[in-house]
Length: 119
Image 1 (cartoon, rainbow, N blue to C red):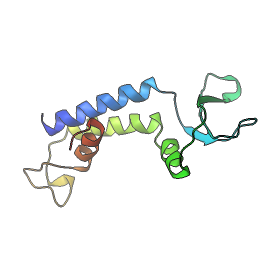
Image 2: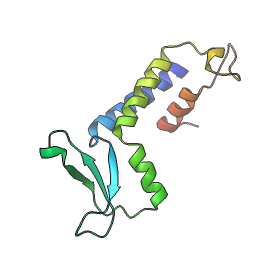
Image 3: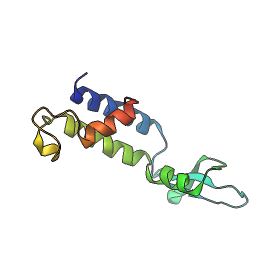
């Protein structure tokens, strides 16, 4: 699999996962009468853009909650678009000071490999 193929596969995986999820931005908040934090989203279709519940009882560390909140589907779709743009470019020195003409890694490829579960 070429680096471009890896980036395109990651973009496809990311886009399909994110478009199937509740739209972002997400936030984690406590809502009465519940005592546990809840994962919430906003839907443009709801009256007054009210927040809607995605998942209840988000019993995770606040630093993990911050990651979930920040990396909502909108971020994933933007990353997918970036990966597709990068996949269309030849891997050259423009990708960074450590990248030579036979470049084998870039930031985009590193992200793609994490998404694809590759080393």
